[in-house]
Length: 139
Image (tube, rainbow, N blue to C red):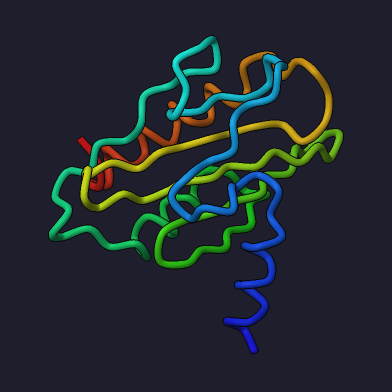
């Protein structure tokens, strides 16, 4: 039953493309960053340190330390997290696509509502980058 629920959530998630190896493009708003674009929304993907020792559960646990108000769901290739702001309750989506062949993790972080995020999503991805480096997951 739990696997069916996770499958349903992942397939209904509007932030991840129908293709399990792709992220949706950022909208034409400054409240999104993505490692699969080269425009103003661009941010570098995460380079895995050692793909042979990569542990998805370690990555999920690291994500849970990113923020107090975070919920995480995942499958073999992607991880989706929802982060709720403390003050106004805005929800942001953080999506990670794990590409073992290229030894990278593509990332997208976006606000669900509003236009401008004051750089919150870019700072979140860089905070996650620092956290994953300290855990030895990425270079």
